[in-house]
Image 1 (cartoon, helix red, strand yellow):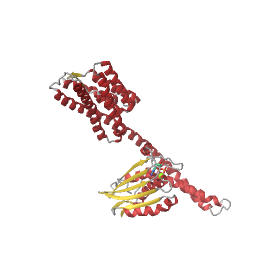
Image 2 (cartoon, rainbow, N blue to C red):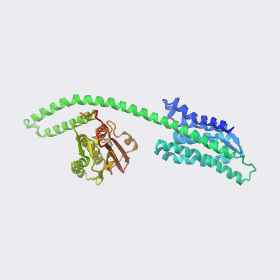
Image 3 (tube, protein in one colour):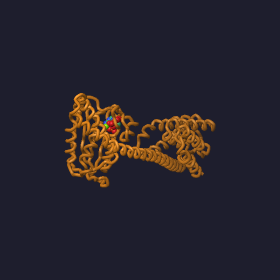
Length: 422
Ligand code: ADP
Ligand code: MG
């Protein structure tokens, strides 16, 4: 009976994702597109081997592994699976072999074309796309075969069960794709979470280390700076060195307080103020700097919301973001700040027309010590993110290489985190 056969097919279709998620998860093999291609290829071949033949048609889910392989395994894995499918079909032979080739080519092109779009979509949408792409081959197959039967005036009459078959086949195909896609998404999410945990552990350790070293270094530095200031008036010979020494020491001190701030943002004075005033302040503060670099810095304020938080910390966080925007932007570029309100939140959006970031850079921005600048410390974005997250807000980066970057800072009107306030 078709139903039993179809359930067998569901199992065959799920086998690859089950095996690579459980058996090979911690193995490099589980991520190799060649291996995935072979697994899915075997699954497609098995589907064909256990086909249910009726009404001049092979009823099976062979294209489900193909679609999954292309989407979740990538083009290499997909090609291997398609080859396996063609090889098995060739071995099976029959008069409709050439039709099978035509169907395979038409059916497989679409998921290949959708591949890029697929990975730009959110997980939920990816599941829907899998369902749609899973139906496409079935549709092509029915269409081509029925056309063929019609043209060749083949005497095969459609079985009266034909429509029931289509209903059963369709339902089971959806079930199979949905299960497989959900399992695939779960594997992806688990891997992402693992990476995230590993990264945050590493960052935590680094952060603690940095904080303790910074503490140790700051004290001697302060002493040296004090004595140098004392000596500044006395030693005539090296007089002109002192400003340089002091400014470099100042820089070192600045970096160290950044480290300490990163390790533990301290909110000293919580106050309620219109955030628009802070934006205007920032604009006034940074305008000379932007002008010096030949960049126009503008702001637009669309909300007079008041916010309750540590003003100086927020200022520091936004300065870091704005400085990066100015630093990334070439002469005659633009940096804009926009303030809007969204319900119980305000949003500060900083846009620049600078050099932008690659995907890889985008994924690392905000992590400790990541910098692409010669003199960079890789602390600015980290500190900003930490401060804003401690305020119960969040920072999001979107960027296009060569076009520019957009940083959205979302802040709750009321500071929700009491824990770190002093
Ligand atoms: P630093 O400024 O010392 O390099 P940050 O933590 O402030 O350290 O920034 C880290 C990196 O993030 C920068 O080196 C730069 O590559 C990237 N970055 C941050 N903001 C932008 C931006 N607006 N445009 C392009 N790249 C940016
Ligand atoms: Mg910076």
